[in-house]
Amino acid sequence: MAIERTFSIIKPDATKRNITGKVNAIIEGAGLRIVAQKRIQMTKAQAETFYSVHKERPFFGELVDFMISAPVVVQVLEGEGAIARYREVMGATNPANAAPGTIRKECALSVGENSVHGSDAAETAAIEIAQFFSGNEIVG
Image 1 (cartoon, rainbow, N blue to C red):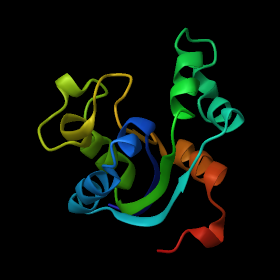
Image 2 (image 1 turned 180 degrees about the horizontal axis):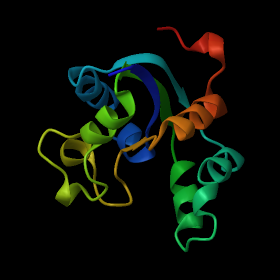
Image 3 (image 1 turned 60 degrees about the vertical axis):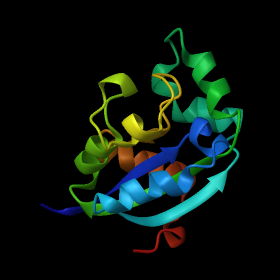
Image 4 (image 1 turned 90 degrees about the vertical axis):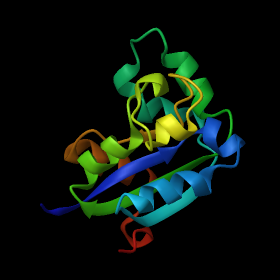
């Protein structure tokens, strides 16, 4: 399997509870390397752009408001099959359905406050990484 990169966000529900380190420990324990990371206050424009795929969905405004409600930690993760591996480590969107040991089972509060985001494909990962990081900020 090839070494690849994926994008991650530790969401406001997790940063507000000061569990960024706990989330990072689960990520690293799964064999993924954090090759770029920064804590930011996402702007409304950034959140709207990032979640534009959901623009016509009824929850779009609530999602944007949530993502700008507190700082987030944006990350680039690297490893063998990083996209699929991180999606596995995140767990099901609904924490009640997430497997034990996954981030969402261990950290998420609800379907809406599910602690993390991860890219779903290589193309998406490239776009999401480029939205928040320049090449020289990613150090593998």
